[in-house]
Amino acid sequence: MNLKVVVLPGDGVGPEVTEQAVHVLREVANIHGHNFQFVEHKIGGAAIAAAGSPWPAETLKACVAADAVLLGAVGSPEFDNLPPESRPEAGLLKLRQALGGFANLRPITTYPELSAASPLRSEIVSGANILFVRELLGGIYFGEPRGFVSQNGSSAAFNTMRYSAQEIDRVARVAFDAAMKRHCKVTSVDKANVLETSQLWRQTVSRVAGDYPSVKLEHLYVDAAAMHIITNPARFDVILTENLFGDILSDEASVICGSLGMLASATIGGDVDLYEPVHGSAPDIAGRGLANPLGAIASAAMLLRYTARMESEADDIDAAIAAVLAAGYRTPDIMGRTGGRTVSTKEMGQLVAEAVAEAADMRYAYHAV
Ligand code: NAD
Ligand code: IPM
Ligand code: MN
Image (cartoon, rainbow, N blue to C red; front, side):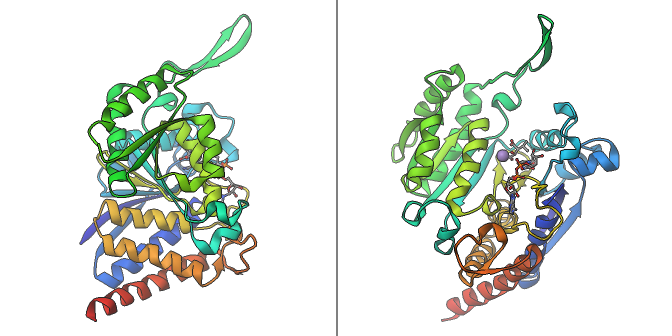
């Protein structure tokens, strides 16, 4: 099978982790005789430095013509004082709009070997498995009007949180469809006790639930949800929420699996699917081989699962990640009190690539029996 992937390494640890994700995808292609083509383009701070814009026309052209886009991360302290529309992050938001994916899937997977990497007690994190479905193209991120004004001689700023019923309906269906393949439970998170957008959210999600009688729906306010996620993560199956709440709650939930570096994401529903780890450019550890590439590698597995429909190949990557963790290999962020062996970003990528070959062999051996 042919697959054309545009790779956007971006800034900070982005290039380090995407390099390893591509390495693992190449290994999958070798094993199965697939033809994966990778073309790199610039985005974010790297694009500002090279082309004067966080979202160059060339990058847009390549992305809309791709089968899928794999992104590292954007953002750099160097550009933190630029206005919102010129910052590296604006490149990512433009990319998301251009590709059109409105449902951002962020799985929280726990590995027993990493329970001691979480500051939470192991009996709390044990067995937790949550899928966040974060609305990605609406809400306060994109609502108009927005801006800075001067008010009574002082400066003021404003943003608009806005949702249409149609935007809520389409992402809610993604969450209910996902729940049907999992444990048939959706928790919808909002702030309907204060916000109009959340009242519309709750009404619309409740209406969509009528089409999914086998799925149990509960509603939580976002403040209480933040507490439940950290005190009893195992009570959740699918969490459906709007853009800003999903951004915040998914970083919080990363604590359950030991590190933000573990989290992967897929953005679906548009013209071209987008895959990116949940973490940012991590300037505090960039360029030193300290970054955990497993979130990026797991995003590559999602790419094979959702865009290429290569279930077995995706399973092999997930099995390889589990095997490498079970064998005790750790980047520093997931070492905690797990007592494993520290490896660099590159070593971790190489270990997963080798384990992918073993996972594929085991699968063939199993089928041959
Ligand atoms: P961050 O996610 O970059 O880092 C938060 C913390 O997690 C840091 O301590 C970092 O070292 C650690 N961390 C992140 N990824 C890691 C990995 N793969 N392995 C090990 N540790 C990891 O968030 P931040 O520091 O708030 O933001 C830094 C920059 O990244 C900002 O410019 C921000 O806008 C940007 N950002 C980009 C994205 C994205 O591109 N999708 C996401 C979040 C933040
Ligand atoms: C994420 C990031 C982005 C977001 C930023 C960098 C625009 O935090 O993907 O979680 O807020 O969506
Ligand atoms: Mn975020």
